[in-house]
Length: 588
Image 1 (cartoon, one colour):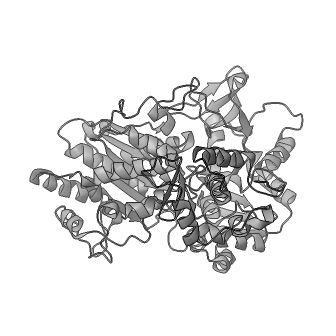
Image 2 (cartoon, rainbow, N blue to C red):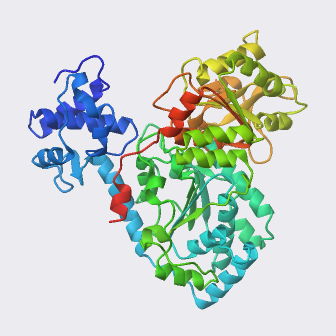
Image 3 (cartoon, helix red, strand yellow):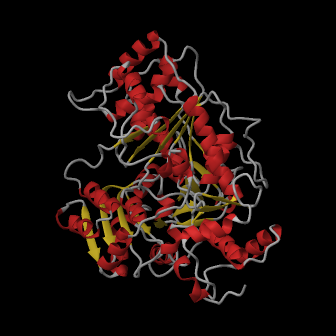
């Protein structure tokens, strides 16, 4: 098999195809081409190769331009591949199932998730009559529903009582952490013994924000001392929770050494890829109650899979008769479901009312238009909204000068470190790309030159982001620090922690970058008062409605966008559609 120079397939794809063909003792051209295609699909974030969907997408729809034969119809392709003995039980490195082709490892990851969920869904989570009465009282005290309206935060809390796995989804400002704090208090209050509760998120920044939100929500509740103490004030990254072993792929916690927790809460689940989720599920005890939080409309994980989106259905079709009966026992009445899909969706609650983006919020209206894929409607929202600014094709460097003058120069002018950190959180430039004139590398360098003309390696007020984990220093990829002098005038890099920021000597830092501008991927789990999105000057495969939605919903008060209407339209029209079998297999 010979590839031309324009081919998107790499030497790795070719080598894998040759290796698996040799394992099957075949020289079949379509078989090898199929292996190359599934290898390429994994690199694009898919869990498998959809024999149906790929035929409508580049590069699969026209393989001849790369010196390869055109692919057959999905039915003929399935028939051809079926002759090689690559079914789920055949032991091949490949698995063919329902017109989806997997590398076996990813088939096994999906299968592990399904087995875990099926076992949990079958475990009854029953409450005594006394506990039901206590739950009814606690739910009434923690939530204040409007008469005649369903309080979905209260539903989510009550639902968690009857599910050993609960999934709560919702956009920014819908009160996910507000709700889950009350869920943890509810579970702790109903338990006849102290609960071990653990909190985690995919990145250091997301874990920090989760802990901050939980602490704030706890402070607003008049909790019993034992209940308050049961809810932790700190959160872990998933890697710290699982226990990283240096230079090894396996984690310390797995099936034979599970995580010690009665309740495990995972935030920002949209960021968790399929392999990591499988490894997490392996490490959870059968008796642990799992709560998953996230925004299913956000970008999926960087690596393969779209686990959160696969676990839910939007809009939620409603709950089974059995679940509605359980909820009624704690004082919540819900209408009959449009479709009864049972356990998988009985465990899901969707929060739709945004407290942050209230009626009249331009950011909220824009987010809804973007996620609908309404390119024209989303542009129209900019016209009348006070919290939105369409900068259009304004000069990039003029904008950068303004952002330096209005936001970044003032960081170093703050009277102390706490106020400098607070000022840093008020504004951030977001980009779709790392490279190019409008990518984060070029923008960070341009801004640094204006604020640090002497080109010192570190300077007062410089924000930096760690790009490599350092477990000894407890620094993790995505952690943001600020360069600031200590009491002796020596420049240190400070990182926020519970209580006081902690200093790190610059020379001890793992790899890092200056971070006036960030990629949208890196901002997941963060929020800022104001966000400026810099679009690329051309259409890009990386630009999608999910990317734009994720970027604009990092803004709490103001959002501006620099770019052309054509690029915006192309981005809002494009959609991330990960190929996977998890959702279909979950629904049977």
